[in-house]
Length: 229
Ligand SMILES: C[S@@+](CC[C@H](N)C(=O)[O-])C[C@H]1O[C@@H](n2cnc3c(N)ncnc32)[C@H](O)[C@@H]1O
Picture 1 (cartoon, rainbow, N blue to C red):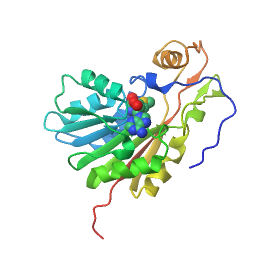
Picture 2: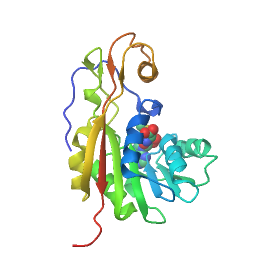
Picture 3: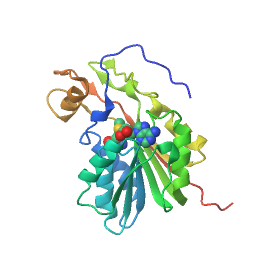
Picture 4: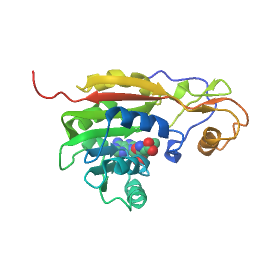
């Protein structure tokens, strides 16, 4: 997979400090569209500090199960802490490339993961293997260079595929999934507020009153075939 590098750099975005608040709306949109409900069995791949896993646990309830998978053992500990009140969350240290869970799932989800992995299609294919026939694979990934501060593009030099969101609808099809829907959402703002403080946390530089459009998150809703011809 080839991505075109951006020349203009206004800020180097360090993703591990992601905060859930500004990207909560795209998550809610995706989960509403799927009508995720009580009893669902799901995995959040590249779960980080567990924000999404906790949100999923509140929806699937005690009758459901949330596997929170991350390659970093520190993330497993953070998720276990964040989800201490939710016994339906199981935090696991595992690489997305080796994803293997004890039961077929209704949904495999990832957010801000594929931009970091070597082969996003291979990871999407592992997620497809993890779900039951007709189960869902949902990914939310950024187009970093489409973000703007004061009209100038953002960049993320540490990510392997900072603009993977722009390719996502094609990548799920390459992974053998059926693309059901796709769209992009970007938090935006100017002056004090959650968007400005999010950017300041990431870059260490206050954007002041500059207009900000954070990297749009592309959501894909994709389905595994049901095995019938
Ligand atoms: C930017 S964070 C995103 C965290 C969370 N998904 C969110 O949206 O808040 C990326 C996470 O993916 C994990 N990660 C990176 N490469 C991975 C891989 N190959 N397999 C599993 N997890 C991986 C990192 O350890 C990190 O916790």
